[in-house]
Amino acid sequence: MRFSIAINMMRRRPDVPMETIAAQALEMVVAAEGLGFDIAWAAEHHTIEYTIAPNPLVLIVHWAAHVRRMRLGTAVITPARSPSPIS
Image 1 (cartoon, rainbow, N blue to C red):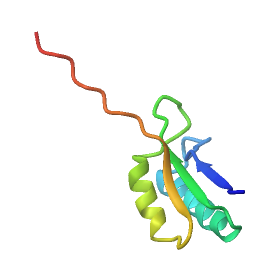
Image 2 (image 1 turned 60 degrees about the vertical axis):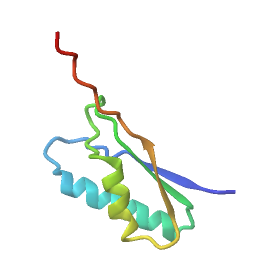
Image 3 (image 1 turned 30 degrees about the horizontal axis):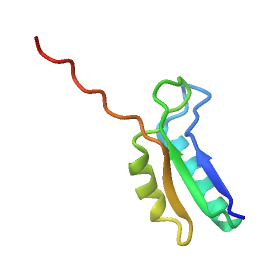
């Protein structure tokens, strides 16, 4: 059986800076690896008010420098919106 963790970068209070949320997310990923989890998933949800995740690809690159065995993946990547055609 494999265990994974999904990190959503939730900010419940607007006064908490992004750096604090990112540090807490990294702590969770490192702790999960120490507990034997196999995969950590990064997600971005720009339509939900309390999540402030930047590009999940940037997050997993940052996490990769701090884990040795754990696999990293993207759970949600919001595609870029194509511009409106010019008439």
